[in-house]
Length: 168
Image (cartoon, rainbow, N blue to C red; front, side):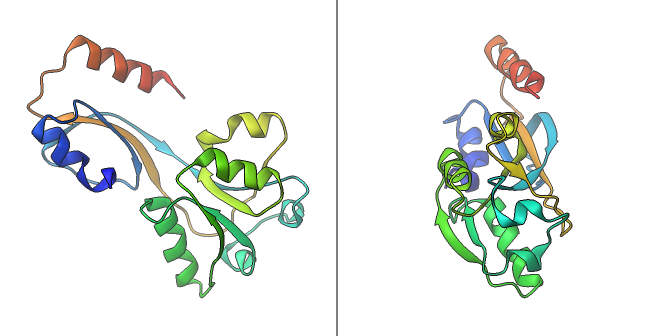
């Protein structure tokens, strides 16, 4: 997957710049151009039974259809490890790399979507989805932009990094 190889691809010059959304990791050969702490959340239709709960933790997800990112994704791995630590066997209803599909399934009351908060702003604004008040363990992730440390920072890269840094 791209996640495993972007450092090597930057080194070879196959990629000029890489954006990642993962738990914090160190890459000694790369220069970190910008970094922002992001949050992951559990989203349901406002009509979903869990939407009425004051707070939700791992045990509340037992038997609940989960809408998850694909098996190569670190969010999914973090959640499954967390559920296992609380002895909750996940009921995975859907796995896809498309956050749009995950959101649509949640809007249609087909389960709980576990996605980055920044991907659901529109649905929250339109009251199509509700974020569950999570009382379980944290899922720390960072959005980061990298280049290889030996790469020249040209104007195009600088401009792109500024655009990314300003998008909040």
